[in-house]
Structures are given as C-alpha cells and as structure tokens.
Length: 179
Image (cartoon, rainbow, N blue to C red):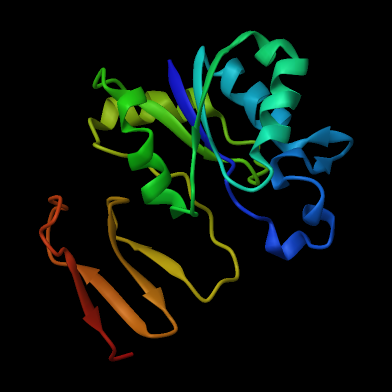
C-alpha cells in the first residue's frame, strides 16, 4: 500500500516556531506530527511512502533517516516553489503509477479516523477518490449531496457547483454568487 504525506508547507500560522523547525517536525504531545501520521499510515498497511518537501526539507529527511524511515520505503519530492495540494500530488504522480488506491494525508492533521475502514469504504463504493472531512468553522465549506458525493464548495465569494462528473480539464466548476 502506498501513501503520500503533504509536508511542504511553511507553517506560517505557527511562526516564529516554524522559522527554525519544519511544520512536519513540530511536536504534538511530545511527538513530531510526521511521526504521528506515519504511525497511523503504517498501521493501515502502508509500506511505501512519498513525502513532498519545501521549507526546511532536509531536516525532515534527516529526521526520518535517524528513525530508520520507520521501517518504510520512503521517497521524497522537492518543490522549488509551493505547489499546494494538487500540485504536490501531481509532482509525485510517478509514485502512484500502479492504478491502486493510496492515501494522501496532510502532515498537520491530527485525527482518530479509522484509515483501514476508510479504505474499505472507498473500495466498496468503487469511487475514484474518497475524502475524509468533518464539519468545522471555516469560510470555505465543501458541499455534498445526500449520497455523500462532493457537488461544490462555498467560499466568501459565493457557491461553486460542480456541473457534472469531474473530467480532467473540463472546467467543472460553476460559480453561483446568489445566497
């Protein structure tokens, strides 16, 4: 099983701490965030991992090496400029060339979600992608239909509805600014 950890972020909301420490190595309860995520992914059967790097990326590589890569096969992608989530994933597309499901996990998400159950749900649904989300206060909200399918998003600029199934480069978002 493969996974990607998005760890390239600068951690601007954690400054000045992240001026010296990459966000992935910031400790939560005495454990670096990336170690927590790797432990959860490994428990769900992940054996191969790619981590994207940008801000203080060499520190992350050194940390993982010092822990024997937690027994996983770990590779890295380096970003010259931040590529955000979609760009980071696209930059690592070569890693996911087997057509099998994989996990994509942000390094700064602390969760107790059952990743094994999430994978089982994904396979049973026959979905292209499965998102694990939860309601939270935010100016950006994802919108789902009664079957749990992502149908749009709401931002401070209005509501954007999907016009239909997502087809790459089809221009799938329609903006509705009426409330």
